[in-house]
Length: 300
Image (cartoon, rainbow, N blue to C red; front, side):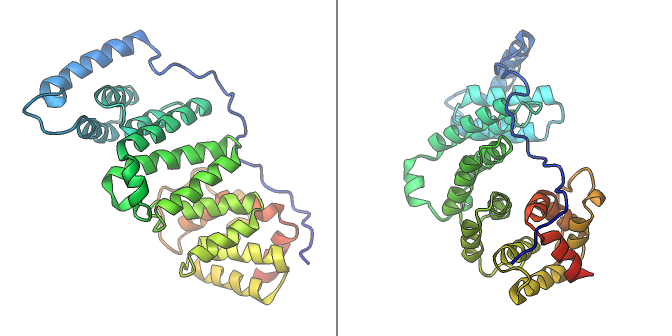
């Protein structure tokens, strides 16, 4: 059996509160309304308004404006462009995603905007695609805004402590797109292990049996240790994880060495990859009795 750990787990980063600040109205300042109207008029003169000579749909035009907004560094301009996009087409899910990302950390409002984005995406995609397109959602360009909104919503629900809802969204996203171009399976694995849903975590591992990655082997090693203690299978999985990335165990044993900011990208075997795995996985390792001591013993 696994030994009980005397190690103190790192401070949990997950924020369970949604009451950091009152939820503001989407159109907060009168001057923003005036700027918004002026912005809409400018873009209307360039062909964004409905017209016989423009064969783009309102959603096409709204999406083009959002693509432009993604390149805009000024937050106010980004928000205005997103709001203009929604005036052009209220089914533009990416416009809601853009607004959600600029809510200054007000979690309740962010959840509301991502939820609106999911609803907008559902309307834009339509019931036929949800019926006939299951299994290849990301391969259809028209479904990607919906999947982006749902990913954002799941992450915010998790941050708010609404674990069941977040996990439910993640599982359903993998049903819609089992190829998982967004990497949702890695996020879901962290959530399942942290909430001790080990049976579901094993089901997820078995759903991707050919994956060879740090995320999978470290998760497998921890799950095996929880189930069997210091077993041959657990030791083998830990050795595989070390071969895949030599930095991960060091960060797990010395979390104070983790950088303050997570990297935006990584390559296999790099320190950046180790940081991206270890940062969300720390609590699961430290809350598993004996797991950290086991790491020390088996990697000394």
